[in-house]
Image 1 (cartoon, rainbow, N blue to C red):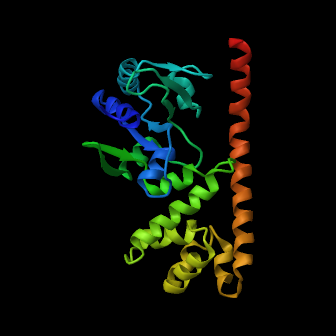
Image 2 (tube, rainbow, N blue to C red):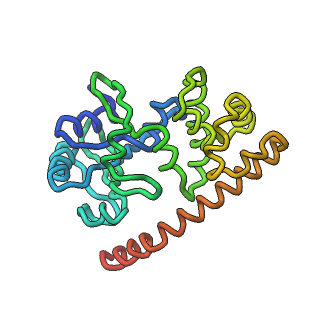
Image 3 (spheres, rainbow, N blue to C red):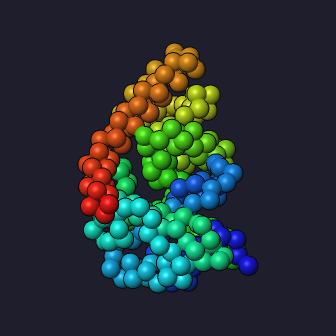
Length: 246
């Protein structure tokens, strides 16, 4: 018998749903978290793929919980649609589906940058770690420690690779002062490339760890506010739907 997480993912695969695993379970597979029960996926929001998802949901005995309803226009508008599974092998598992996310490119671009891992004899497609980091830049308190751990895990795994894309990612996204300083000292020629995104990098040599933490906190506050602004009209739409359903 598959565990509940594997049951959900294998059912999606069996029904040829084109999706990318993201959220907590992707963080687990990238070595930045220990456990997550919910399944969060980015979905190709095409009519054919939604038909495939409908079949998978039927196999999982899944029902929509809360609002919005399961409709293509809500997915394309940036909403998440939430399901609860009642199949005996996945009882109580929650499946959250999104197609459009703030700060992320189209699904097709995300798909090209994906990571493939094997899980219970299935190839599972993950959102790339850099894209997952951007997806985690929300107003939620729990996401920011996870961003830090994801960037740390990436650096620890690839620190010996002098790859331009990876070095720029570390300089843009590391949130650990000692590691950020280490990368800047190792690759000073790359600092200028990303300084437009992190202006404080140019002064890193003269900054204390406390100064760096304060700069990172300011960066976080900007992203939190951008996320609040992004979700404000979407939340208003959800409130209208709740009132209508109620």
